[in-house]
Image (tube, rainbow, N blue to C red; front, side, top):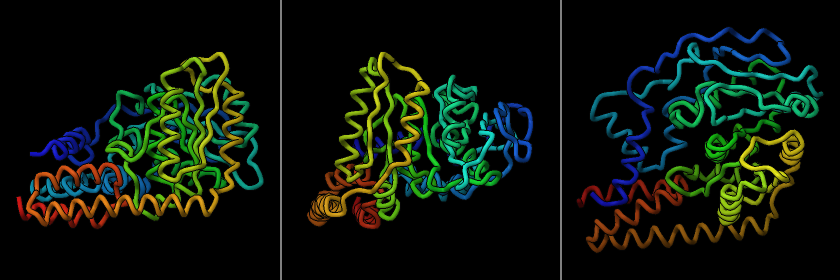
Length: 356
């Protein structure tokens, strides 16, 4: 087995999206009262979204080759993916709803925490009121929890259920998180730009175009490039994450994602956003004007040429019988370009498979 293949098979093994029954944690408090405002600390939701289905999670969050392998294993073992990876009757959410809805509807911030008990960070209530922004965050979605099987679907389901119950301005639906939750939020923003139109990345970020932050299909990625805004909020003393923010923004720009902004909190370390920084971030999330069309077109052409060249190299290796080297290159293409390389990457994988 090549190193590239073993790498993404190890990633696949760490993602239990398919098998067994959701873990039961014991029932939380109760459903959200109709039209409730203020802080609701332990809410049960009941509605499931097509976007949180296990098949959809795998399609959007795994690389194409990893997703293909998941389907192969499922077929060979006669085990089907669960329809939904979580049982909402066993989950609870913290919800804050400002008392007055803006004329165009509330904004919405689905927040992924690093801690397991959902709560509203200190000082955020007044800011959420000012911006007409609903806050929703799931319990048991902190850093110890599985990303694909729990943290991401819980964020999707929290947002979906709020959108079923309140008038929401679709343009102001955002994903956010703190620390490890921020890194997960970045993956959600990349995978679901058709739902979330911006991200509050608070003290945690990564590059994209990797096995963990997989590039979506061309249509979704173009939507991410043109209509998503990413606000990085980090304490100026949190040097490790400041450096990672700079690296993340650099890679975003290299992938033609220009709607980025870095906000440093003065005299702060690794902390959740203070009210002033949160207010500035929420204001910035609503200020996206769109990238320069010529700059965006030139950037996209550069990526298309690079992808075509890499695919051509892989085809040449296959044509010359160098299947081991071809597979190693293909797994690198799979991680770097994600679904931008489909269907060519899948066709190459099938060609290599017949010659191995």
